[in-house]
Image 1 (cartoon, rainbow, N blue to C red):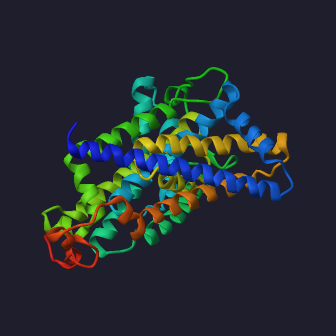
Image 2 (cartoon, helix red, strand yellow; image 1 turned 60 degrees about the vertical axis):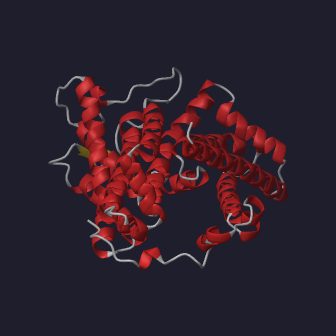
Length: 380
């Protein structure tokens, strides 16, 4: 194991430990909130755990919620690694799910080993295009991705609703249920756990996390993405076309979000519904808690999936409002952010690093050149 790999492993372990400490702290603060609401925190957390892990069905529900959250968290992570804040995951998820629902509802008479990959490919392509648009706008015009992705979210919602309500003559949609027609059996994601709603989408999520980790840390493109995310000016100075890199990164982000939508259409519901599921916004939290590390996002997604799965049990068994789960999610995000900010404070940096001497001091904050201001090759 070389020094770079060792440093990356130590950094990942340190990040995982800091996230774990932040989660524990958030749960302790959450216990105070639950007590203030007049309920017993121990009973509330016990009910939450039972609803998420007590039996096969509970575990199944946790995995059902976790699947789109993991893919959405990965979508956020690849964009964040490139220095972008993709808040358009929800729109990309909706477009991908709609595309998968349309392809799956058309009966082409194909066998499952062709039909299912075709529907998944449609979701990935449409989601990727929806994600690539703000990437191109950013590279070509400098348009801020937060604004463009938010606008594309609403466009995705309105476009799919219009097509479902008005284009029933041409498309396999049903305005009565506000969704596409039922997906044919050959295009359905198979169930993988008897007696539950768990489908193969969770396997796609796990595979995507491993693949994205490999791409980010073992390929030249991943190096380009991480370099652009650290400094666009430095990457351009070094010959990396940052515009092309962020465009591809946003396309991959959209593809992952599109696959999350496909899991809902082809696996869970068997059709696409016009109502946005809301996973895209929670996925941002999943990516932040997982510190944009693909492997850590698996655990982060399962954590948020468990919170969602256990919310109903917590309400029925302990009498605690389901909204407390939203409070817990917010506390977890705040705690992780607080730990991350504290880790960057000068006092902590001085405690972790030995004093610099001589030429090493030139790299301290305020003494390094403004690389961002240097001109470089064309963005695209």
